[in-house]
Image (cartoon, rainbow, N blue to C red; front, top):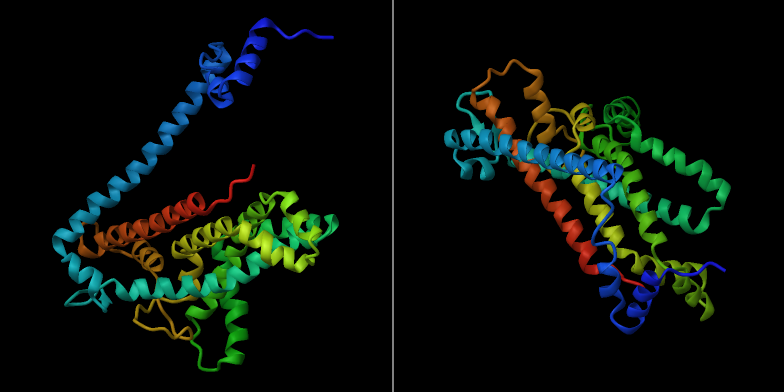
Length: 323
């Protein structure tokens, strides 16, 4: 029988007498200083610093050029104006039509992605057998890897013709087909994150539901879903942030007509679509039109940051901790 070294015996004895967490937290305070360990530590440190540097560089560029724009244009006019026409004379630089188009597509997309993503996750995690999971899981993952420009062409060539038979008055470029295409692209995000949240629910809690006579549907709806709710909400918020930042699908499918509307059958323009429009044109550097992309980019950054931060706070506040 292998004997335990005296040093480990003393640590285990101390852990039994004192606070176990405090004792084991001291174990390993002096990590190995071998060449391999030091090399890995430096490698990970460099990667972490590089990631932070890139993030701060992006923020600096957005703030610097955005500040130049707001020296030329009133920030109040920019965020409260209801007309967007940066190329005309006089220029109308109210971003609300672009925000309206962005939210119109994002809300429509998330309304489609939530039921599809959550029900897919529930089915694959709790109802499907192993063979079905092996077939469907890669298919869903492939949906997440398809370039969004493909979703845009899919909306133009497949979704819009189908919608035109249901709504004859629909425009060729419209918010509804863009919402459907973006919603399909969001399904893998919600599905995968919801699946992970469901898997974190301990099996003994589920078995407890069956022990008191609940059906499987009751266990799923009354035990598993409430227990995984924080993860599900976080997945929805992250998917919504992704929808807000979606570019190519909405550029191709939604059009380039910024307006204040709630009609999904009309052509609209999102913030990301306008950035693409400016980037592909002959806009001279240093002009007001040129700096609009940084002001819009800064607005997009804060919106997506807000949703990601909110998702993180929800997970931390409502996360169930099981012992």
